Length: 448
Image: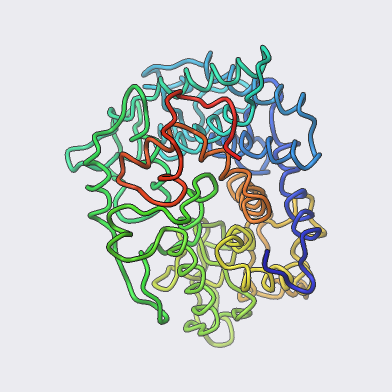
């Protein structure tokens, strides 16, 4: 492990433990649903719920939660999704085995007329599969976890979202049908495609992955060649579950790197952009970076130091081509830890000890801050988002664990649908070649 004088394993565990507390306290124990963010009367997010299912094994291994409690929470979640209403009705929980992005925390019914989300369903399913792989003992409760995860996994009809372009659709609404957006260009859909290709019942044709990869953009930025995606989280989210070190698909074989190295380069570009600071935002520098899709102080226009600045609320901020309004996300820096610890650890130290962004908050890092917006009563960090989000805090737990022990990666290397999906997408090399093909759908034990 790379070290920093003031950020050792103990400090990383503190960050991780504080982030995990969100999943302890912001879940409904009756159905396992986890609230999207800490605003009053806010609905659950299926993505946050999938992250929760993956954090429970991490919590058990670190002594933050008993195995019995983790099993009870996992079973409550899986039983809810198995029993919840599937169908075209606008107040159902899902349709075709997929689920709506936001669900009512109590009833589990669709909230806000939101979309049936392909990517958020994939994050939920990844959590189910991680839980099924971890809870491998021959006991009634752990067998039920594996059986429910298998049933829910087999129920998802990925082919329903397959479009005429060969790519996957973002989602569907009962009021208007399939939404017009397609998964095109490199992003967090890497996990989605692997899962959809690895289905034992409704797998996508293998050529859909090639259709998606054909939309990639390879760019040269700040002295580095890499597969471009602007928001930093898009280079991290799939890596929370899948170990891409040493395995390559056809695209990466052609470039001579893997997706892990690509994420490292994207992380380095973020720091170099902040150091260059072309738009002259306050605070940007070697230890102050991290631009991603996130909450923000806007929408507003303010004149600051003679410059008219446009600020946004939630938007897909990205580097180096924007949009960028001076808003940074500490969590996305922590989630880059496995890729570039030599620049992440000093930045964590700066966020925690200089800007005081962590220790005074219940769950650690809030979503974002913006020093350009104003001093906010003299605070060094300027404007700070009032909210915590499960989608932000989950990657902190997973990626610190992957850096320190590799547990999530070990679990998913032993997960047959993941290995199958990777192979069908054309991945080879490394651990994937060394591993004997897994014939059962949900393995009973993780690989060592």
